[in-house]
Amino acid sequence: MSESENIMVGLDIGTTKICAIVASIEQERINILGVGKAPSDGLNRGVVVNIDKTVNAIKDAIAQAELASGIQVNSVNVGIAGDHIRSMRSKGVITINNKDNEITANDVERLLEDCQRIMLPTDQQILHVIPQEFVVDGQDGISDPVGMSGMRMEAEVHIITGLVSAAKNIYRCVERAGYQVADIILEPLASSYSVLDQEEKEAGVVLVDIGGGTTDVAIFQDNTIRHTAVIAIAGQKVTDDIRLGLSVLDDQAETLKRKHGESYADLIQEDEVITVPGIAGRPPKEITKSILAKIIQARMEEIMEIVGIEIKRSGYSEALSAGIVLTGGGSLIKNICPLANEILGIDAKIGMPLGITGGLVEEVKSPIYATGVGLVVHALKTGMTNNQTMMPSSQKGGKNMEQVMNKIADRMKSWFKEL
Image (cartoon, rainbow, N blue to C red):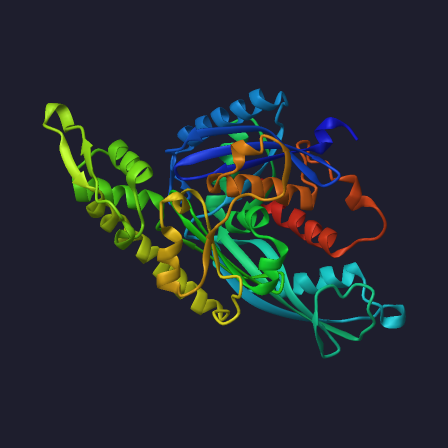
């Protein structure tokens, strides 16, 4: 296997930052070789609004990652978010006509295609089709039916759709920056690969990724994603509230949030006074920590309340034994876990990227890299390497469920190419 076949590149195109991660995979061990980060101001609420600014930020972030890793990047696995993302459930049914009525991977593919026969607005397209469960001759609870015998097979799937123009603009930005798109992945799905462990997905967990422009929600139960949502309120709104509430500059508001911000005013032990330089020669301002916390808390409470609505909408509010995992840059604001616990009534913890075995481990050990690392892990699962060559492990023997999903994903990616 050549070196480039073993390299995965994740590109997290966020509202406030663009992050590129180059990793090598050896025997399913992930080594982070290079990390690049650039400020992003070409997006609004997760959607590209300025192509040139986004292209330049992508170039900067990837150039830093290339320099650190000494590897030339050809293709990237890129994330997509934004409040245009929708999710729905769909069902399909087929009959099995093979010899001995044995279910093959082709039958599963046929069934998943049947599940995609849904009416969609012309501006929306399917991004992911995730099987929830299969039913063979009335027997439910089957996760992989290949090899079983049966006459009739049904499936329930979770379908995630996105705005065609939003996805095409991401493709356009990456291609203008000089790279190919190996795969496009929903960001909360990517984050889940890096911060949730198997036990949490089994027991039932809510992943909340609070980014700059969007808050991504994913609910897992029985090892399967059950509900996804993207909320257009996140860290940038908190900064805007501080800027307007305290009449300070945007940079000052961001610094106040990062250095002195707290999410829960009642937990402040010492109410310090923070001095902020005046604007254009005006005298400095004095701000108390508790006033700052009240501004932040109001917006964080709103985010948590909307997350609570999404949990109810999913129908899994009684099945979340592992509670809530908070990640993304917004989760770094102090005391966010007690606030989430108070509002949602479930245990909360901060999620850091897991499963990294070597390389720049300390550099990516932060919630802000959850999506970037998750994109690399997703690439490992699907075999989307730096030169878009499938990993040899997925070429052995007959087709399995993951390969069926990859084949369907490849077919879905074809519609992006019609630029």
